[in-house]
Amino acid sequence: MTDPITFRPAAAGSQPDNNSPQYRSTGARHPRQALLGWAHTVTETTGPQFHPTHFPPIADLTAGGVMGERIIVRGRVTDEDGHAVPNTMIEVWQANAAGRYNHPGDTHDAPLDPNFSGEGRVFTDANGWYQYLTIKPGAYPWGNHANAWRPNHIHYSLFGTGFATRLITQMYFPGDPLLALDPIFHTVPDEAARNRLVATFDLDVTRQDYALGYRFDVVLRGRLATPMEG
Amino acid sequence: MPVATAFQTIGPYWHLLEHAEQADLTRFGAQGETIMLSGAIRDGNGDPVTDAAVELWQASPPADASFPGWGRARTDANGVYRFTTIRPGPVPGRGNTQQAPHFAITIFARGILTRLCTRAYFADDPRNGADPLLNLIDDPARRATLIAQSAGGTVWRFDMVLQGANETVFLDI
Ligand SMILES: [Fe+2]
Image 1 (cartoon, each protein chain N blue to C red):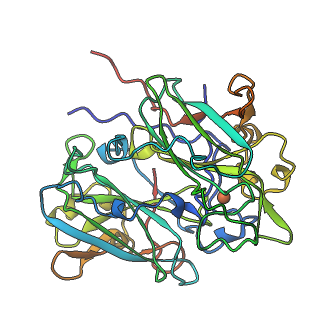
Image 2: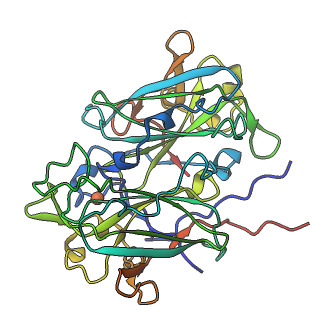
Image 3: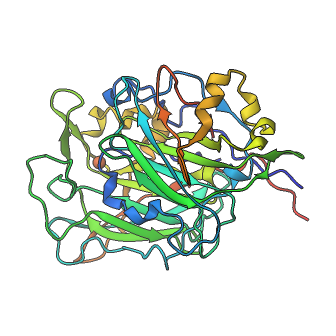
């Protein structure tokens, strides 16, 4: 039986270190022992495949009339080999326009919006494109240091084709003055890699008289070598 | 050449996408030996990790319409997660090797920027002795962190420690 083709290790500086003291909560939550290196097997190269039958899409987070600035987010999911990742599930979650999550753990003194759950779920099409409609999330304070505020962001969860391609990340907004101050954003060492977490304003995604549009592309891990055909 | 997008922490509010039924991989009518996998997660201070998202993936039995192979569970106020699933069989390793039955486990949480990956094997499975991954770990105490223990009946206990004494072996996936 042919060995599965392994996924590529992360490019230098492109991923955060779990030991990032500027983000205080990492202190007791990062392993001290070295991670065990391991050539991928079927356990890592295969992964869950989701179907809209069991995971119905939620592409309009504004249904029911939510408060805030409507936005359209559109983008493409590809891999490091430049191939589209089709029919893959993307989960998103976010604070409401006032910077409050519909979550019992969020005690920020900002109004809840009874019509806004903050959960979205979309699938990429055959060419890797996805799109959803939401409202721009507000900035919110957090306890990391004095006067700490998270920049506006939308949380993303992607699966891709294998266990090894799983990705949890955050999409930020262009021009946000809080980005320069955010310790979580700055855990990504490489500046170019960091800036790829920032969506771009896109007039082609913007819908006249309705909503601003943002473009946010995601790249999942590629394979270490191209499988031989035939 | 494009570079994979950077991870950012799942944060404390990921429960917005939690659906409790996703912790039950048998909910679509899967056939096989139903078991529960459960355990507590502790941090480097010995405190329970109460806001984690734990994900389980298994390549065996193969996923199909009645079995997703994947589940997600929260940790509760005691740091405890619970999955109901089908007991896996062995799967091929690299070359001519076989891997002992195991789950791939992922921890996402506030304070974890990427993810922590490990595996849970079954204490009663004689094939563990020939498992290529377990055999990479020389220290028996370290190897033991990847072994789920029987908690009676169909319940298996798999605790994880993020840091310090008895730290779980985490994998560079
Ligand atoms: Fe957030």
